[in-house]
Image 1: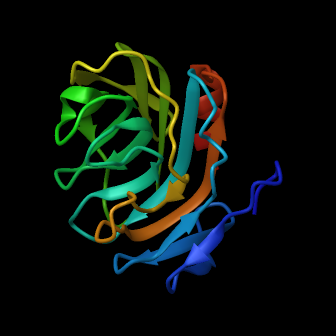
Image 2: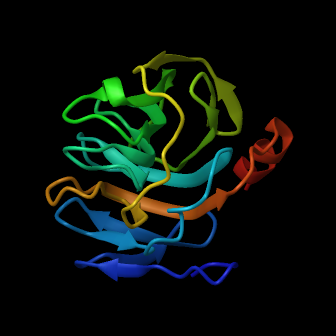
Amino acid sequence: SSGSGHDGKLVGDAAWVTGAVGGAVRLDGDGDFVTMGDILNSVPLPITVAAWVWIDGTDYFRIVNTDDDDDIYSGIYFAVAPTNELLAGFGDGTGGGGYQWRQGVTSTATVARGTWTHVAAVIRGADDMDLFVDGSPVAGSYDGTGGTMATGRYPFHVGKTLGASSASDGAIDELRVYDCGLERTELAALAAR
């Protein structure tokens, strides 16, 4: 449930389990996710996404996504790569088939699997993004040549991209999305449990 009235709908056999702070959504990597509808389709940058994650699988762990289309990339994405780096970014409304139409940042630090970890991304613009692991800022490198973010035209999904075969294996607790760039002290407070 949401403190702002934006409750999600569990899809597949996603289930509520004990989380890092409260109740978490458990996803088994086989088509489970939470759909939030079109709540972020008109939200401009800056935006902050923060959550507690428990990653069981070895594939991408998709935290949130409004950006996925073979022809046009728009909206935001936030995930952990199979090599455990934190990823965040957005699409610029152009493209087709490649990251050159996205602008993103990849952390140099890694996210642990099999334990609760707090992760956050503050996305302000093309070369103005910050990543956080357990409340501390982590360095990253930028990729892509995308321009200004185009707001999404797809539903806000938790735990998967919009593609049918890309669901996460693990759990997500205390997912928060802000229509502003939170400060370091605010993100450290979210990670303190």
